[in-house]
Amino acid sequence: MTALTNGSRAAEVQLRNVSKRYGPVMAVKPLDLTIPAGSLVTLLGPSGCGKTTLLRMIAGLERVSEGQILIGGRDVTQLSAGERNVSMVFQSYALFPHMNVQENVAYGLISGGISKKKAHIRADEILGLVGLAGFGPRLPSEMSGGQQQRVAVARALVLKPDVLLFDEPLSNLDARLRRSMREEIRALQQSLGLTVVYVTHDQSEALAVSDMIVVMRSAEIAQIGTPQQLYGAPDNVFVATFMGEANHVRGILAASSASTGIVSLDTLKIELPHRNLPNGEVDIVIRPEAIRLVSADHAGCLRATVRTSTYMGAHAEYNLDTPVGPLFCIAPEAANLRKVGEAAGVMLDAGGVFAVRA
Image (cartoon, rainbow, N blue to C red):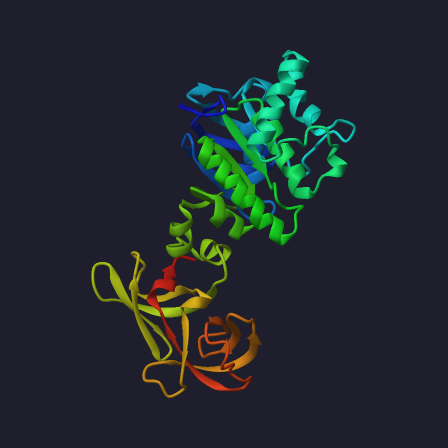
């Protein structure tokens, strides 16, 4: 374990062949996952993919159907939530409305047998840690959504958990506050060296806060990797299209070396890593920012017609009709907006184009 400045210890979490079944329905199919001590790992996926069920199994709020869960090397599979030394920050914050902030934060300590005086001192220390020094006498109703979120985090931290769990913690906040709060959560996790498991369906949130992302689909893991790996080298169409904006088309692959191949998209040819895909028709994913618009008579380009044209201030967005299908494009030259119906050519930056499995 790793010692933390707030007195808790960061613990590695290991899931060994863990699954969850509700009658005939597999909510989580058997999987293995290691969450390194002191890291922030995000479980990311659409609704119903199993990410929250997996989080609740780590917390001890759901019993596993098969497999083992180890926290800090200790088998906690059969232990209750209260015996695992984990804390959870819920989507709703779950603050007691009749208690002030200090009492909310101290509640878990007092319930555990610590004197009220010591618990309140500890609560004030943690409130200072999350930027709420002096807010102890306030009621939750007197605080903003972002401040209530910090109280919920303080209430979890005051118990000195081995692992801190977040279940969609920012979904009730507006876009600007979500951005600010995710930065604060990440900064706090890094400064304290906490082990954090974080659940969200928001790709930008996952990219911003995570050391590692576990993308889930249909109750199983689709891919695990760093934000850079998942965005820049997705394994399959689902991960590629789920991790940010992406165009999905079909192309023809012809291997040209042990690692690369030439992909043909109608008249456009581009060299890409072939990733051991067979020659022939393959799935191609194109990031919108990898599309460069050129003149319609540019040599070797993919011919396109502008279907929609939108000025976005710092950039322009286009929907294009092409022989390989519709493409969404983000272009930096917003000042010279192309017109609907205008002919254009498409060239691609290889760094944002991937040959992937279906």
